[in-house]
Image 1 (cartoon, rainbow, N blue to C red):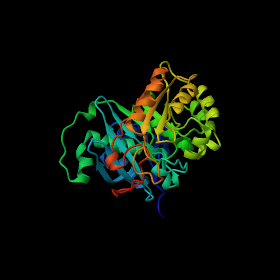
Image 2 (tube, rainbow, N blue to C red; image 1 turned 120 degrees about the horizontal axis):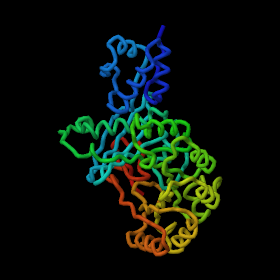
Image 3 (tube, rainbow, N blue to C red; image 1 turned 30 degrees about the vertical axis):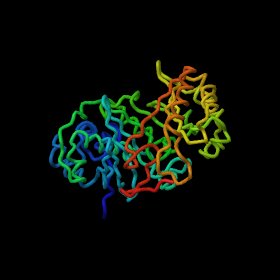
Image 4 (cartoon, rainbow, N blue to C red; image 1 turned 180 degrees about the vertical axis):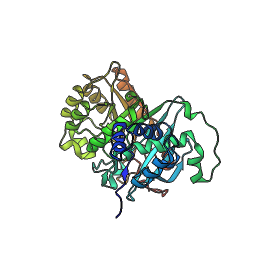
Length: 368
């Protein structure tokens, strides 16, 4: 009779202690396993030498530790890395490692695919396969951090020689901005956030974690009551309901005015702001009047705006605003006291930039 194996990845320290106790073992071994996974990055029970040999043998029979498997790692000219991960059931997701001067940013997925159908996002072409588990969400972070600490594991897939790096010593930011709508998978996302922010887990403080949503209002309120409340980013990209209805169908259910009201109620720490992401699309949402409406919409909020040029690859006839138009848009926001930053695309040459994740497996997606 086949023994049902317990998946260890995604369990809290307490859950692991209960599991060990259910085996008739000392509960404290659960804390040892938790430490080995999240602090030591040991992904094979056999390598956890703090555990006795008989216990390791028993755990290998009755449990498993299944991380997303990197089947392709692409390297951008700007040193961004895009990972194509295969999950245990064969579904695939993409995640992005973005090295920066003073920190590294990991962009992770929360769903395989996405059901939101935003017209400027390639992931929308996939549709939704399923939600990711808490372990699959945290597992992306573990895999990329392991590669950061041991570059040879990432470069082995590319036939490259490893080189020493200072990356390991830089702080890490996590952005839940990859494939999927995080708030549609809030239960598993919340569990993954606990693993990330736990000082005994991944030890990434909540102020270094950002969740991006298209604006599911009831779920925003639910997120505000979660044990770990990350920074909130809203994908807005329009200043009228007419335009946002076309670009982001979710707006037909949760219009702009109601979304802004929900943001006004979201709890913020001192000096914390809500980020509004605004993809600039030529002749659709980039006029001076749009900029002025945006200032008015956000006037009652502690907010900042990230201006994102539309990245190539969308098969919808839309084009990015020109650099001159983007600069003018930013000037109007800044002149009214609204902090606004133009975000330089990272990894666009390997389709790793915002809105480009599409499980391409290295194949080029034709731009319109």
